Length: 312
Ligand code: MG
Image (cartoon, helix red, strand yellow):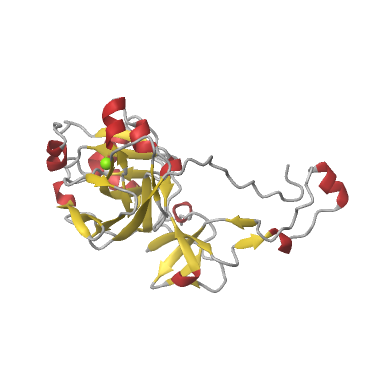
């Protein structure tokens, strides 16, 4: 089962002009301005979907929340026609409360940066605000001079867990996805701790889907920059297994449904520059492509939240 999140390019971007105008009383109370209903105002929301061949069947909720009496995931589809992939833009297929990451989980990668392999999983966090989807641009920060790609296997948690054993840990996995742990290497070395280097907006590309039946053992992980292979290894070479990572993380924090774990990157990390295109491929799972663009110095302006009648 492959799970996606998507925005529909037309129907799911609803111009305000197609919504009812609030009456005058509401308009005063809500302090709305006269531009209500301008055509360039859009509501854009990503929805959950089930991907079958190239058709997307809309889901009523996050798929790991739809569990039947036996404990099996039974995503509920909405009775409407499916979309084709050409009708949608795919978003990152995860909405985690946190992204737990493992550092130095491939021996050759630890060695290439002059580090020892840690005796237990070395855990750090990336903020969910760093997540972008397939084909979205990674923004090269103006305050960094060295940004690296890190192709990684991502694990999506399906059930809340705390203090699980290594033997039981895989029961809590919902599925697997492809990720890129983009890193400002110079700031990682300068800061000592990694929140800034790993946490920039756009530094967590994820996608294009979550596969619930993927077998992550002995799979090739590759990262290409402009079609040149930079990283190539096997998940068999992880120092700490996925089960051990989950057990280890769950010893100190509750893992929630939808949480994302990045399992570490193989050797071959290296710099990218604006204009490059990074592609992370995991054998049998999928390929995640993201271009790199330079940061502009313009202030970041967020669109206003939808101003709906009756909602203050
Ligand atoms: Mg990493």
